[in-house]
Length: 419
Image 1 (cartoon, rainbow, N blue to C red):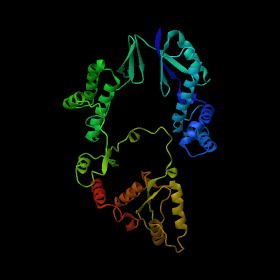
Image 2: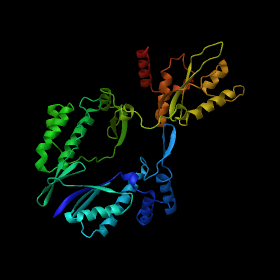
Image 3: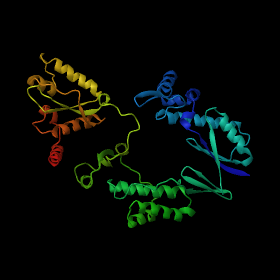
Image 4: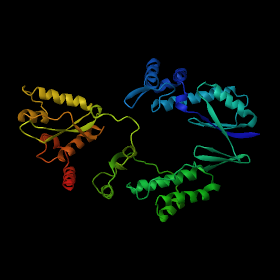
């Protein structure tokens, strides 16, 4: 008699030995070399650096090294893990005396249909591949078995799939009244309907429609939109015939819709992809140690001039740097040391301090913003300069020449609201 079983690797990444992963990729080099111009030696050296020599992380101002398995968080780890799992299955299949009727894999989850008398042998062979890689096993109960986001039912000699949610599933999607583009909100619900209906057999559709209706209702979708999404489900995907250029833009309610419907850009060439600036990264606390200000890079910063003992100043200099902030501050200190020498490439801060005999406060520098993108960082620098009153600025006038007029209006409006 055949049975259905699900195997799952215990802690996949920490369980895979580094040397085993490198060895398997070394053995499969003939298959891999056509996808790279690197030599085998160079490729394996880089791989070793990524997954073996680069397993350090910082916590509570201490440096730690991961002792076991593939490094958590490394982009290379999922790829190496998948290659090792493929090798594991190929090796174990050759050793099995009773071949399974079905064996399929998704990352480290295996679904197997095999004889009930062969299942212990199958588990033992899977666990014998490596001393570190161990599997847990779950068998069917009452003719059904959960696998990924489906539940598989036994119906005589046929498999039937239904949509499955874990008991801990919250049923939360983007709320209908969330500050996102309405098309994005609708597409989220549309994709939910499409996915559920696509992975479940038709006999379960009515039941699943009720579940979807409850989920969308709890997320404040209007009944008319819910009925339209469920009743007019499209099974085909639209294909884009003409290649267009996507440009991302922060979503601003009402303003973004007006811009998208305007004639301010070529709709035949560009597609505007709206994005929300209120990301999870901003909402949740960081799990990594906070980088101290002097070690941060790609920042826009502000330095206050303290004047001198006889004269207070209170003006500010706004700058930007892609390097660490402490490196840029060292350059400012060097500029000030050369105050008695004639040279033309002085910063506005150095020129102000030298001409006024003032001293900037380089110990309490304020980071205004972080931005990795070079041109966005320059734009943000100009906007932050404009946020200062003209009597407070140390920067050269040319530092803001490229700031668009509309941005100047917005920053001036913000400044007047804060006064």
